[in-house]
Image (cartoon, rainbow, N blue to C red):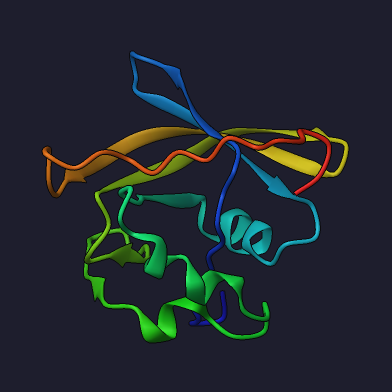
Length: 133
């Protein structure tokens, strides 16, 4: 967005289809990431591994700073922030969106992806309360 990488920790990302490979991602209505997605028509999903908790820390800072400033990135043809140390990365194009209360749900087709280490397990977070973060 205006030349700055924008990102967030996402709680609501899931597979939505096989052919073509499709995901959905729900993003809070007030996030700057919505502007970047609408401007580019693209979204990147960096899947963290169980041991990648330290990669989350920059995303917990104030939103006026890019969380990617302190993280190593890989270049890709889509110009989407791709974490070098992520377990996996998906480059996706937005194919639809649904306004759902305080979130926007994006439907996105997976155009490309990489699995950096098939021996690692993805980080999964189960919330104790589904009504707030």
